[in-house]
Length: 111
Image (cartoon, rainbow, N blue to C red; front, top):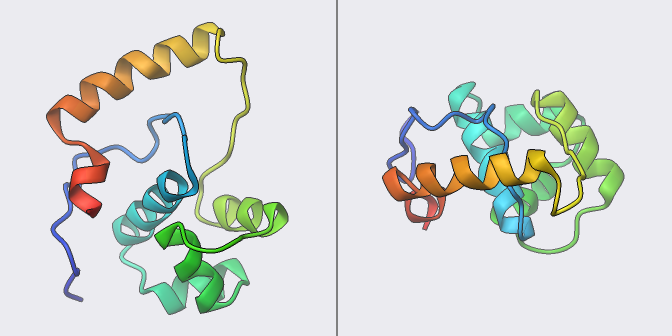
Protein backbone atom coordinates (compact mmCIF):
# COMPACT_ATOMS: atom_id res chain seq x y z
CA UNK A 1 0.00 0.00 0.00
CA UNK A 2 1.42 3.35 -1.04
CA UNK A 3 0.77 6.27 1.32
CA UNK A 4 -0.37 9.57 -0.13
CA UNK A 5 2.14 11.53 1.94
CA UNK A 6 5.41 10.54 3.59
CA UNK A 7 4.98 9.83 7.27
CA UNK A 8 7.51 9.76 10.09
CA UNK A 9 6.78 6.48 11.87
CA UNK A 10 9.07 7.61 14.72
CA UNK A 11 6.28 9.86 16.02
CA UNK A 12 4.72 8.01 18.90
CA UNK A 13 0.94 7.96 18.68
CA UNK A 14 0.81 6.80 22.29
CA UNK A 15 2.33 10.11 23.41
CA UNK A 16 -0.41 12.39 24.75
CA UNK A 17 -1.15 15.44 22.63
CA UNK A 18 -3.11 18.59 23.29
CA UNK A 19 -5.95 18.77 20.80
CA UNK A 20 -6.90 22.24 19.65
CA UNK A 21 -9.20 21.33 16.76
CA UNK A 22 -10.83 18.33 15.10
CA UNK A 23 -8.05 18.18 12.51
CA UNK A 24 -5.63 17.33 15.36
CA UNK A 25 -7.77 14.33 16.34
CA UNK A 26 -7.98 13.27 12.72
CA UNK A 27 -4.22 13.37 12.32
CA UNK A 28 -3.78 11.11 15.33
CA UNK A 29 -6.39 8.65 14.06
CA UNK A 30 -4.83 8.63 10.57
CA UNK A 31 -1.34 8.06 11.98
CA UNK A 32 -2.58 5.22 14.18
CA UNK A 33 -4.41 3.63 11.23
CA UNK A 34 -1.31 3.84 9.04
CA UNK A 35 0.90 2.43 11.78
CA UNK A 36 -1.50 -0.51 11.96
CA UNK A 37 -1.24 -0.78 8.16
CA UNK A 38 -5.00 -0.56 7.72
CA UNK A 39 -6.78 0.82 4.68
CA UNK A 40 -9.45 3.36 5.54
CA UNK A 41 -12.27 0.98 4.55
CA UNK A 42 -10.84 -1.77 6.76
CA UNK A 43 -10.45 0.63 9.70
CA UNK A 44 -14.03 1.85 9.24
CA UNK A 45 -15.32 -1.72 9.23
CA UNK A 46 -13.29 -2.60 12.34
CA UNK A 47 -14.60 0.45 14.19
CA UNK A 48 -18.18 -0.13 12.99
CA UNK A 49 -18.57 3.27 11.32
CA UNK A 50 -18.98 4.29 7.69
CA UNK A 51 -16.01 5.02 5.45
CA UNK A 52 -17.48 8.51 4.98
CA UNK A 53 -17.47 9.16 8.74
CA UNK A 54 -13.94 7.79 9.12
CA UNK A 55 -12.72 9.94 6.25
CA UNK A 56 -14.41 13.08 7.63
CA UNK A 57 -12.85 12.39 11.02
CA UNK A 58 -9.34 11.90 9.60
CA UNK A 59 -9.65 15.06 7.51
CA UNK A 60 -11.18 17.18 10.26
CA UNK A 61 -14.12 17.95 7.97
CA UNK A 62 -17.76 18.01 8.94
CA UNK A 63 -19.39 17.06 12.18
CA UNK A 64 -18.70 13.78 13.94
CA UNK A 65 -20.90 12.86 16.88
CA UNK A 66 -19.05 12.47 20.15
CA UNK A 67 -20.26 8.90 20.66
CA UNK A 68 -18.91 7.95 17.21
CA UNK A 69 -15.60 9.70 17.90
CA UNK A 70 -15.20 7.81 21.17
CA UNK A 71 -16.14 4.56 19.40
CA UNK A 72 -13.42 5.10 16.77
CA UNK A 73 -10.81 6.13 19.33
CA UNK A 74 -11.53 3.07 21.47
CA UNK A 75 -11.42 0.67 18.53
CA UNK A 76 -8.15 2.19 17.30
CA UNK A 77 -6.54 1.87 20.73
CA UNK A 78 -6.73 5.59 21.50
CA UNK A 79 -8.65 7.51 24.18
CA UNK A 80 -9.63 11.04 25.07
CA UNK A 81 -8.60 12.72 28.33
CA UNK A 82 -10.13 15.96 29.55
CA UNK A 83 -8.09 17.94 32.08
CA UNK A 84 -7.73 21.44 33.44
CA UNK A 85 -5.40 23.61 31.36
CA UNK A 86 -3.56 24.41 34.58
CA UNK A 87 -3.02 20.77 35.55
CA UNK A 88 0.44 19.30 35.84
CA UNK A 89 -0.52 16.68 33.23
CA UNK A 90 -1.31 19.37 30.64
CA UNK A 91 1.87 21.30 31.45
CA UNK A 92 3.93 18.13 30.98
CA UNK A 93 2.20 17.28 27.70
CA UNK A 94 2.76 20.85 26.48
CA UNK A 95 6.50 20.57 27.14
CA UNK A 96 6.77 17.27 25.26
CA UNK A 97 4.57 18.51 22.43
CA UNK A 98 6.75 21.60 21.89
CA UNK A 99 9.89 19.45 21.77
CA UNK A 100 8.23 16.97 19.40
CA UNK A 101 6.86 19.69 17.11
CA UNK A 102 10.29 21.25 16.81
CA UNK A 103 11.81 17.96 15.62
CA UNK A 104 8.98 16.54 13.47
CA UNK A 105 5.60 18.27 13.62
CA UNK A 106 2.45 16.34 12.71
CA UNK A 107 0.98 19.33 10.92
CA UNK A 108 3.86 19.58 8.46
CA UNK A 109 3.70 15.84 7.69
CA UNK A 110 -0.02 15.82 7.04
CA UNK A 111 -0.20 19.18 5.26
